Amino acid sequence: YVQVILMLIYSGARTGEFFNVRKADVKLEEGYFNIVEGKNANAKRRVPIHHKLMPFYENWMSKDGEYLITKLNGNRFDFKSDHRQYTESYWNPILKDIGILEYKNENGEMKEHLPHDARHTFTSMWKEKKLDETFRRKIQGHSGKGIGEQVYTHIDMENLKAEINQL
Image (cartoon, rainbow, N blue to C red; front, side, top):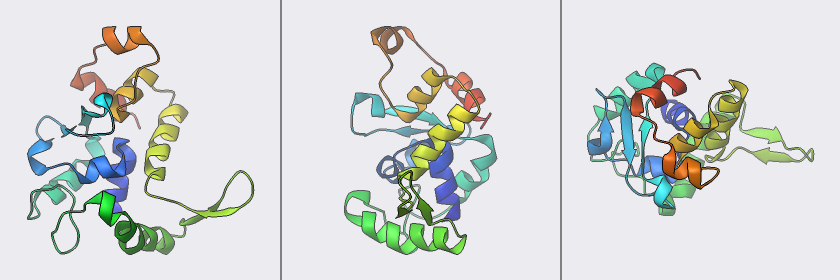
């Protein structure tokens, strides 16, 4: 499940979106997966797979089941109802084991990292590398800055893959 955390970080996907990805929506040869349902119209998108994480996707695709990511028993994670189970049984033990579960926030308070923090990490890494913000918004399923960007900016998958592979 360390692979899952890295897949979340390097996809920029919301955890619930990622756990809803069916194997049929993963296009390994083309190097992307589809998010077919999300919180808004922009959330439906193709997400490039970082080339260094391709073996992780291949690993999860080889497992039984309809969904890309499953529980240890092979059953689907329904993130809406299984959020707490995922966090307590998978996420927290991994982060605790490697010593990064807790952190101090900007107010000096001790907090625990949550699965959604993987999405924040993606954005932070993107900004640190000074990559194109239009591409990031497209990959993460955000609305564009303005109507011009939303309507007139068309980015093909090869350009998205080239950009994400710079992380």
